[in-house]
Length: 330
Ligand code: G3I
Image 1 (cartoon, rainbow, N blue to C red):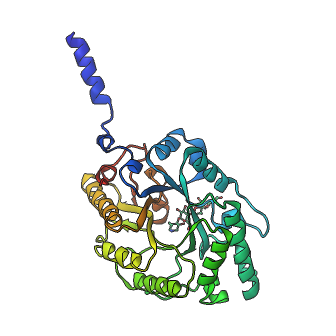
Image 2 (cartoon, rainbow, N blue to C red):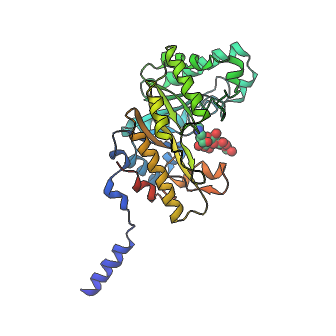
Image 3 (tube, rainbow, N blue to C red):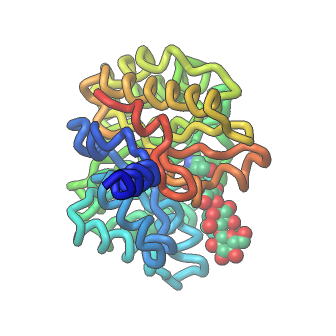
């Protein structure tokens, strides 16, 4: 009897403690979309990755699979395998899709560099038509223009800016509306969480676009944060002023990186950051989506880009929930 009790006690102790389960899956804690960036490779090959994704989230954003360099590495040669896999997963599992991204200075194919102004213009329109057309009706929201500002609020001198001029942004949105009238069209950027020079520029541009009748529906706030820097405490105020322009807001790429090694103090600080992002979104009725840039430290872009930093996601490398997962609650 005692032996059996002892065995039962040991067994109980061995069961991983998942305190968050009391609150239920993330997607059931809110009426916002709760999303994650996903990569087709682990989606297709790691059963535990797929099952946590399916359990916790109701929206997915392809991390790289819809970027121009991936879908059309050579002119006229298309590779839709990763994007198709994610969109099909979403359809089969009742998930919403955020398309990412159409016009971006990074991860575009090299052959664009050889094009003059008018050819680039028609190629960008064609790209938007082709990609949005392929998934017409199956993408809830698209990041149409991504990361177009410098930190000081000036326009980034991308090939699109340099060769197509200031109007490339309005043009891209008009082409996007025509390509899939059912998709919400977003401008998306990073370091625009709080009120600062860059978010001022974003605010001013969105206001102008709205005044001009350009079909823009939303602003994506990427929210790549680090506990090394203070939390952008004016985030709620910034989301409120943007929403007041008559657009939706989405948290599109949230993660909170940590100088390694992580410890419980750092993980608690991280949890506080995630919670503040979650709360800022929920304080603004037009903030419709809370998406994280990946959900597991097993597959995060952070260590590759910021050596010595990592552990930025809600789940650890073994897909165990971290303190931040528990903290983000209504
Ligand atoms: O697919 C190739 C592979 O064929 C090649 O062998 C390998 C060698 O380096 O590279 C692979 O491509 C990598 C790609 O991720 C897919 O894994 C690229 O090198 C690598 O640069 C790329 O990084 C992505 C990055 O965007 C590119 O700028 C990250 O995964 C992705 O998380 C990151 O996402 C961005 C958002 O799109 C926009 N906002 C910022 C965010 C984080 O940087």
